[in-house]
Image (tube, rainbow over all chains, first blue to last red; front, side, top):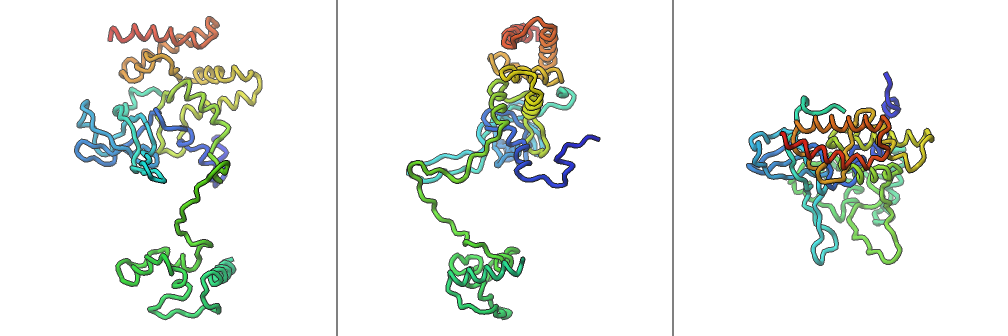
Length: 116
Length: 220
């Protein structure tokens, strides 16, 4: 079986792993489509984790609203990995500890998805 | 190496803090050792809390006492930089970032959504970059054509790349599942036609594709 070089080596350096990591592959997060998983629900607010530094919070959509429960996989369009802003007179930014994304919908089932 | 570190640490610390030198005195059962008390002198929040009895001893407490850092990790406000002085931390950029930037500019996000949770995940962009490097190493194709050739090579291996050109193409992405199959069919058709040598320039594909897709949603 043909194994990639980095799996044949028992340990891979952090720099090498970072270079190949999906985060670096993605680049700037603006307008990228990602898959997230809902890990917490508070009535109409869905807390979605997509593997970035922070999670994002989205409103439950009207279409198929009941289908969005804990553990559901959803498609997101990422806007920002971390919501930060600098207030007037401050020396550093203030962070909300949250990412920003637009909820596109549920992840389609495997039958309808095309194999690449 | 453990002992050497300890001795070095002791020497350094006593020099800066003025603790009386000498061998390590044994601490009594209820007392903190001199190294520890001298060490946690100023920001000794943990030490104070421990003394009061509010928290129980954290795991790192003894370790920190035994192997303290060279500089106490107190936050120091960084000096404001003027003029040409630059940050010591360089931005993280790789050679393949050029290819990635161009890929995202032309093709948008990519046909497949990113799954950042998987550590060995390979996005479409990554495959594109690898193909690009492969073709570059082969050296047969010249620089300007490399980008297009990589696109064609990926199409041949089954990965469909939709250009981020006209709005109609972008809207088709979100419409539904039924249209995707027909869109794929149309794209394959155009690719076949191209490979048969009818069209060379890929830009001509997009308006044609857009026209066909305009006809497509009408029956559905």
